[in-house]
Image 1 (cartoon, helix red, strand yellow):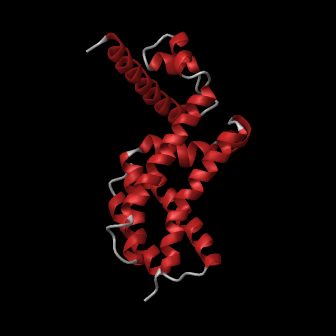
Image 2 (tube, one colour; image 1 turned 180 degrees about the vertical axis):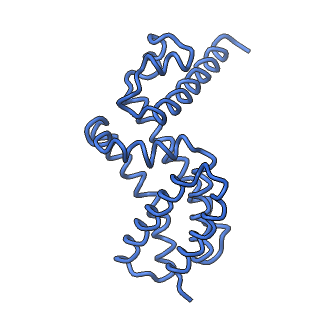
Image 3 (tube, rainbow, N blue to C red; image 1 turned 135 degrees about the horizontal axis):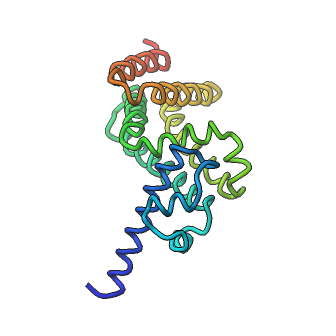
Length: 201
C-alpha cells in the first residue's frame, strides 16, 4: 500500500472516530452541552486535529443529521418494493422505522429527540441552508409513507395528517420503550392498531 492510500485510510478512520464520538456526546449532552475539545478527547485526537476535519461544532452536528436522515430514507425506500400491496407496504415502513431506532439508536435520538429537546437548535444554531436540507430530508421520509397511502386511495388532505400522526406516535413509542424488554410486544400492538386505523376492513 502506497503512502497516499495509507493516509487516506487513516483520514477515513479519524473521521469515523470523530463521528462516533460526536454521536455519543450529542446524544448524552445535547448540542449546547457538547464541546469540540470533548469530542476531540473522546476520539483520542488533539483539538487542532479535529478542526482539520470539521471546522465547527455546527458542521459536525449537521453532518450527523444528514447521515441519519439519509440512512433512514434509504431504508424506507428499500422496504417498499418487496412488500406487496399498500397495507403490506405500510406495515413494512412501520417495521423499518422501528428497526432503524433499534439498529441506530444514536441517530434516532439525535434526529427525533435532541432536536426536539433543544427546539431552538434547528432554527438558531444551524445555518439556514442546513435547516432547509434537513427539512427536505424529513419531508422526503414522510413522502415515502404518503405515497403508500396515495396508492391505497387515501385523500391527499388525510395523507398528510395520517403521516404526521403515525410518525409522531411511532417516535414517541420507540423513545419510551426502546430499551425495554416489552418493546417487541408493544411495537407489534402499535403496528396492528395503526394498520387497522389506516386500512379499515
